[in-house]
Length: 378
Image 1 (tube, rainbow, N blue to C red):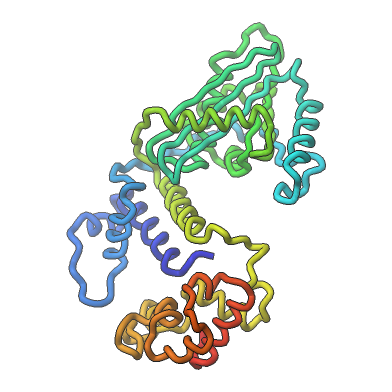
Image 2: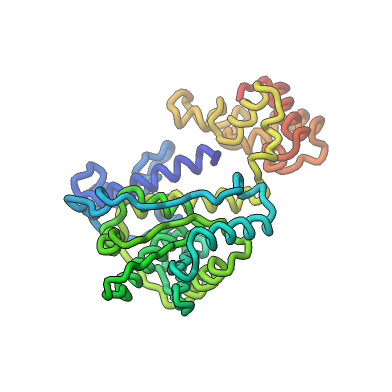
């Protein structure tokens, strides 16, 4: 779980984007005004503007009203055929790459024979929310192949790039349909379960417009594992990266789109700050229940320290008793002069806060001992 501070920033940014898109929102006009200089406690309005300034390279000033839902969604009476599993693959992360590739190719070749099905592989790519690209590799039933690489926007999440790749595949099928009356079969392979799941929910108007003419076609969707050497998927991946290098456009975004982007911004930031983290290897789960709670609260910042309590309105000041800084988790574990001796006894070399909160079992136990020695309740 991300820190309380980062989650708070994410919430204020989301509210900022929602407010500026809705002229009737009470904060809409307030956010257009100048920031007032506050001496102590910062209002949500102030925090929203600050957070936007810090992330404005990944956000935008252009607004767009919400897309209107179609009166009658064309997919309501046409259930999509989407498979999220491959026989023999229970958990992708526990399978050898060769096994993943072998089981997937065996299933796809037997279920969707090349001589009767057109195989379409789609993929999306973006570089830390910037420069998105979509890749589409098509293998027709007559043996011919086609490739498409396209840019998906200067600001683009991986998810959005994946969805645009699927939309582009729809458009290609529609533009190249055979009007001979002969039945045509299409199988779209995608390694993003989230993108496939979005098709079963309410798609955007642009996506539904591309889907509508094709719903009566014999078209199915199949999830496939990524990065295991499946030729079509690897080709689509390369095409998506090629697309991300093309000239990009800057578009306006709906609230739902910007909400997803903000979520991914903080998700990527957390991954960058915790590159070696694995839930399965997290030693916190090996600790007794009491110690688990202590570490969890320190990690999230949702604890009894004054900086957090001040935000909650249960402390009159965010300052530590030492008077040198706000009483945060980092200050207590690393810098507070009141506990220099305690830190020296437990950590002669005083490792960084990452090791104290995310290290091995011994590291975490030392941290819980420190909290007990300082007679504090996390």
